[in-house]
Length: 389
Image (cartoon, rainbow, N blue to C red; front, side, top):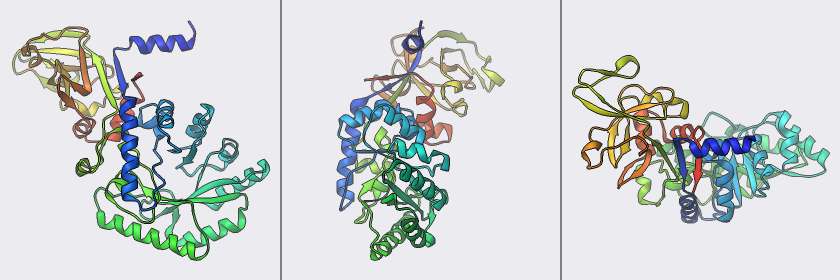
């Protein structure tokens, strides 16, 4: 049996999996395009963020769906992700968000990727590789207006751009951007970022330095801030059907793209007073019926969900009892046995998604685990077989 066949067999027989709804993905992309048209005066549309294997949804399949929907550009983290898209023969513009290493300059040029530039050292390496290839390549410059991560300090932006233009004739200044770290929690700070960034762009324009793409709007930035300066948005989490803030549900309709399901592998009765799982952090206060589900922290189901989360069995919310283990969780299905149909081995259980009109959202899982929806999606999506519909 070859590796491809073996992988297919493993995925087909896996008792736990992710369902990816591509129709919902295309719907969300369409809604984001409409929102960009409303919130940006000179909108060129959205550049979906498909880094981190499309937040666990599968980068290549997501790219294929978006391409069919007419998407012209994508944002990814690094050159490796961009090269994978080129190897799959996608022709769209691909922006690399990370400030890459000098050693990657040749690959960036060869694969026609659009890098983010934050240092003259990297700019010189890219310029040299482009010169050797006999071409010019577009780049975007990132300005740090408050994220404190990557970017040219805003006070140094004018001098940096001028030096860039003088020293790198094989690079084309195509875009300039910044990032909003607190768009969901500090509106005043974010509006201040927008004003300072606008002033800086206008200062550059007065020096006859212009850009085809000016952008800053992540999902929250696109959803809750209007702009007559930005012409491109970079939504990530909203593409996958998740609202970064509850209030945004009033402004844009989205559909969750990922569901996570599994099957019951064992059912038993636990007598009153008996402990469950490692450390006996849960002890039965009465006789209960429990089901064992084949998902654990090795599959991305976080250990911090122990004794906090719920799972849908027969359309009933059933609590996770005891500690999450490496490969399995234990669920109290006593309430589900009263639904008229006693759950049995082989029955489907829903970790995230909808069953018989009841739902468990990624936001709930994130709240129970004391984390964010991004981590839940990436953890589950990257460690479970994915099936596309």
